[in-house]
Structure formats: C-alpha cells, structure tokens
Image (cartoon, rainbow, N blue to C red; front, side, top):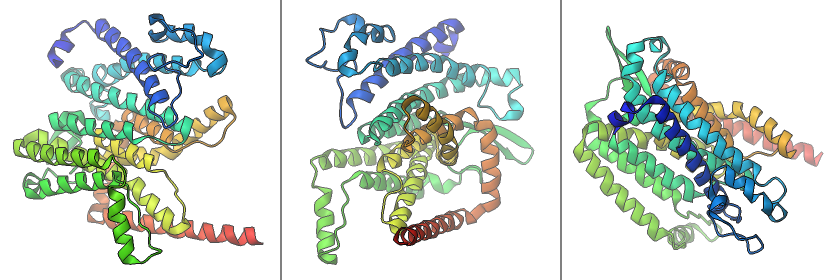
Length: 422
C-alpha cells in the first residue's frame, strides 16, 4: 500500500490528504460535541435540537455546511459555527503539511542527515507511514483539546480507544515510531525509537519471558488504573479492602474493562509469539504508555499527599498514556516538559478570545506532543545525552524530583494556610 501511495502523483497525494483532513475535522467536531459529558446538538452528524429547522445534506459538507448552519445561531449562540469551521480548515491544511514535512523533506531525520537527498528519498516510505499515525494522533488530540476547553475534562471514551489503536499500530510494525540515529563503533544507522534507546542495543532478555511479563504487567496496571478505585479508611483497614474490591465492580462498565484486559493479554502473548519488529514495536508502545501515563499519575499522587487536592485530572493521565503509546516514552517525556511552555501561547490566545484565564492542562500536553514531533531532530539528542549521563541513576533521580516537588507543594500549602489565618 505504501508503494502504491508513493506511486501516485504528489499533487494528488496532497489533495487526498486535504480531503482526509476535512473529513477528520468533521469527525473531530462530532466527537467534541457528542462524546463529551454534556453533549450539545451542534454537529450536523448528531441529532438536531427540536427547535432547529430541518437539516439537509448540504449542512453535513465540511466547512461549507457551517456557513449554512449559521441559521441556528439563535439556538447555539452567535458565533457557534466559527470554531468548528476553523477546526476543519486547520486539519485540511495540517494533513498535507505534515506529509510534506515528514516524507518529502525528511523533517524527522537527524539534523546532520536532512540535506542528504538520497536518504530523504529512501525515508519517504517510512515518513509516509509516520504521517498516517501522526495524523490520526493529531485528530484525537484536537478532539480531546476542545472537549477539555469546554468541560475541563477529557473523557476516557476518547483516550482509551485511542491508546488501544496506538498499541495496535505498534504491533503491526515498529516503524510507527520516530527515527533516531544509533551508533555502534564507527557504524551509524537509523532506528525506530525503541524503548531501550538511548542506552544500548536491544538486550536479548526482552525477547524472553522477561519482556512478556513486563508487557503484561504494564497492560494490567493500565486496565486497573481505568477501574473505579475507591479506598475508604474511616471504618478500618478490613472494611477499606472490602470497599475497594466492591468498588471495582460497582459500575457496569467493569465487564467491558475486564473484556478489554483479557483481549489485551491474549493479543500481547500472540505478538510476543510472533516476535521480531512487531514485538519490539508493541513493547515500545507499552513502555511509552507506562511512562507517559505514569508521570502524570505520580504527580497526582504526590500532590494529593502534599496538598490533599488533585493537581491534574485523571483525563490528563489517560491522554499522556495515549501520547506515549503513539510516540514512545522518549517523546512522551519531552511532551510533558514542553507542555508548560506552550501554556503561555494558549492562555494568551484564550484570554484574547474568551477573556478567561483558566485553562485545563490537556491542551498544553497536546501542544507539547505536536511540538515534540515538529522539533524531534533537535530535542532527541539533548534527551539522549542527559539520559546516557544519568545511566542507572535515572530512576532514583526521578524519585528525588518527585520527593522535592512534594516537599515544595507541602511547604506552599502550609505557608498559604499561615498567611490566610494571619
């Protein structure tokens, strides 16, 4: 399929991608208004409000349909149609631009290799495949971002299927991951950003039961994190355990979650049996899920212990897990550290448009993921150098940072209480 795609005239490929972007934008608008906790009958693909005039097929056309739907402004608000129209236009531009960047100019290649015309040409197939995965991730990020803007939450119904899709893509091929240059003596080659990089070549142990058990443990922990977990200690430890297990099956969705877990266990075991790049890709995606979601989860725990309040929502945990499943742990880390810097631009734009200063963290993470892909050739070497220097001290270093953050948050909380009492 990649060969067929590359064989098409370039302008035709751009046209197909632009149309795909329009369709993706229309689908994103459908998710934004119907997959949220408080659905609104705005999308032309959703049931209309009873007060609206009868909708026609023309209302469902991307971009143009929103021009005709302006007649509903008395019901949904004066400028309700502007944002969805811009979302569809933005994705129609973004998809071809992404393809040009990743497959035509080798924008993801290491900086020193981007001027090599033959290498850029050889990378076209890999870049085309990456474009598919990144375009789909962009679609999910757009939907999640605007739901988060509207409701300050990101629904699991968006991020959980997105994470599973990221895992499935990785199980098909390891070349859904960003390229990095790997050196071994005088020899250098391009490799997908496997979970073992930047430290060393992939150790044989990850092809044994050690790798399988690691993958299954990550999958099981993720499914457990999605369950309804409640610890109520006011009636004693024994009752707390009883309430905890009762809570796991309190909601009817536990059966669906159990089915997802079983299907995942079988799928992971099957890919492990196949081995090769498929297994390396899936394990890389699972590690990305664990690191991406684990960072935010750890911060939530530290903030709760220090301040007795949530610093980040659980939707941010599942969003980062999805980003890690698509991009790997290295990109998930850079996404997290870039997120605060994106807040300046996002808060400024939102302030100008809505006069609101409060912005949820999900849009920052989404913007951080986009910047990570755009500046990957510059960001990865810096990440690699620091992690190689830290070596085995990476985990203790991360724990120390979390501990310091916890102490600082606790001190801030104490100081705030002191001054408020004063």
